[in-house]
Length: 286
Ligand code: DGL
Image 1 (cartoon, rainbow, N blue to C red):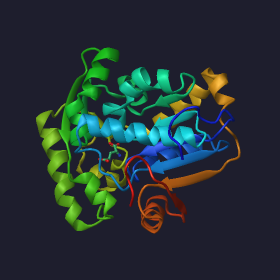
Image 2: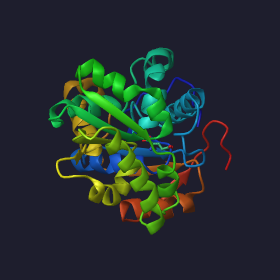
Image 3: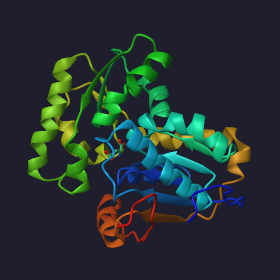
């Protein structure tokens, strides 16, 4: 697959990208909201996790995956990954799209989430649980200040959570320790928090362990549903892009890792069988 332009002009599937399996939680919500479209999911499983990597590495890996999806015919790509949205999206939108193909679009998950939280919090105190990369980027507090001045944001990086999930240990009793550690630390840092952003698309898998730790009145932002509704709204407002997205109701899965590994883990995430195709992206040769 040649990742350099020109890319196929014919309409194509909507691309959904994540460093690993987390984006599947977003994809499921998008498909439930917009079932008629075709989707192409790419998990960079060979290079996950992104959350502990530097800005430059996350940007390079994300750009490689986005251009791979463009080369496969996607005109619109959703970064279903908070880390990539925090560290790569703006540069790709401002620097790369104009030279690669100004008509293609890449959208992230942070902006729609931030737009929604303003009406969700009553105390105007928000908590963020996310990867170290997303927390260090400062993207959530910055975006929230821009849209909702005066809302306090307290952030907590959870470096162990993605590895627990990627290794299918998120239901194990061992995971309890790491979940409790970060949730309690965050709530102690700001007891007025009433709205909790799970700022990593993997984290909904830990929700059954997070929820019992929350005091009454603290609720979790439904990021997947918010992103799906925001995409539906985007397609309504951009008929020219809508016309470039095919409608066959299909979904295909690509992974930079071994396909049997992806299929086994993705099936656990989605509770159904999923067959993936192996792809080479950038310098990944696994
Ligand atoms: N799922 C990604 C996110 O939303 C990151 C996981 C990773 O560290 O690769 O942040």
